[in-house]
Image (tube, rainbow, N blue to C red; front, side, top):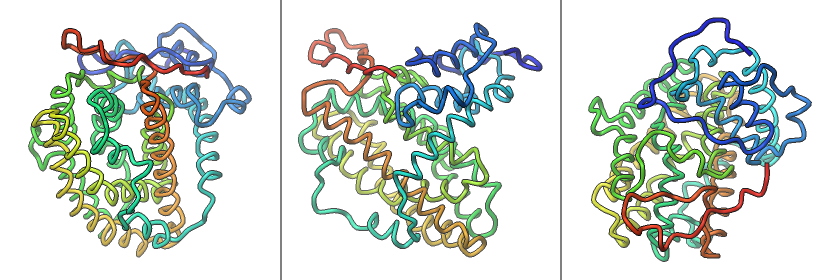
Length: 359
């Protein structure tokens, strides 16, 4: 599957290594990126794959990553390879169809966000509440390792919607993104703050370093941003995703900051979440009153798409939370490969990695 033209591959310090495949689809994609395979699976090979499964989600994640930093040693021209794009479309169709089926509620924006704006009394099933009150340090480290796939991307997937907005919606979106990227100061970029958090927790802060450790449920929470962001037709869903994250971030960040204090994770670890308590409370108002309202003013037909984006986000976050809490309740790791700590002997109290259970 040769590219039509070649360009330099990303240097090792800029891009992560390719992960290990988890099934026929992801192995084929990775082999193609290494130049070891000329043919790719067709749509018929994708159709039986589990939409939320390890194989499909990893294959999709790897293909999406070509639009971010790419991978070490992989030709950058493959970002637009027609064969890879055809396969990506088939994978996306499976994923998007499953998301629409699982969130088939056809709701208005008010219906979708009304329940998100009310802090629940019962926090059963909440990962942040568990970590605040009962979580152990090894669980906090696992959570941070998995979330690094999301937070080290900053707000990059959401930035794709900016040229697809206008007026109030665009102005407010840019204002929020400006804050996410540190207000013009590199040391205050939220991705940099999360990397500092990882250092406090004795984790590797390198971009993409925990891709091989992430189960499908964690990959899906990142893939949905890329799916919505890369398609103009899904701009309403991306705004719904972004709004859902901002609306629910502040109370969750407050609980996570408390967890960091209780477990003495370190000042940078606590600061990342205290920073988000206030910032995201402001962002929540902006995204609802200006981004969503402005978009609906311009394109009222996108209301159901905005609600779908929020519902899809809630669905995938719930799936990830269930996997984490179920594994931790058994005293087991929720990761597919064990964490490696720089601290001598730190792994003695860590559980082993979970069995991936096939593709």
